[in-house]
Image (cartoon, rainbow, N blue to C red):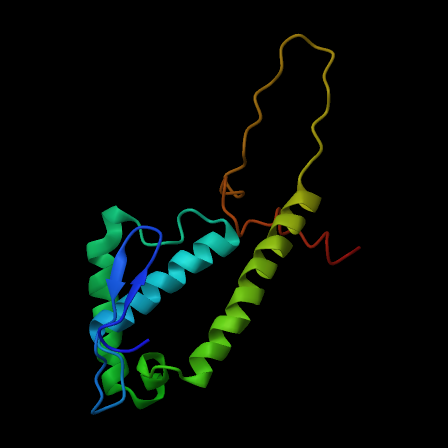
Length: 153
């Protein structure tokens, strides 16, 4: 794609912006668009509806990406993030598109194995299930009690 080309997406027509040819870096707008698109793709790929930038957080997301862009300009070892077509960024995307969903599947499997089976009760009144203060409820990183039982077999 070159400057002036247009691309039709599902929701909008986007015009390609001219990058910073002097330094060989993306512009702030291109950088934001790349991160925004990356999160959209990651959300679709992982089926996580909250991963893409939501309308209510768009302003904060833009401020955050602009701040990151400015850091990338100043910090040499971060400049790969704003260099178009950079092999390191492409490798990171390829690695992330495999490892993130894989990690999510492993977490789900561990939680399923640690889940206590529901016992059928013959009593008419059932006691409500109470979560312990340690479990944290719906925490995706809560793998159950840390009592060492998994390590002991």
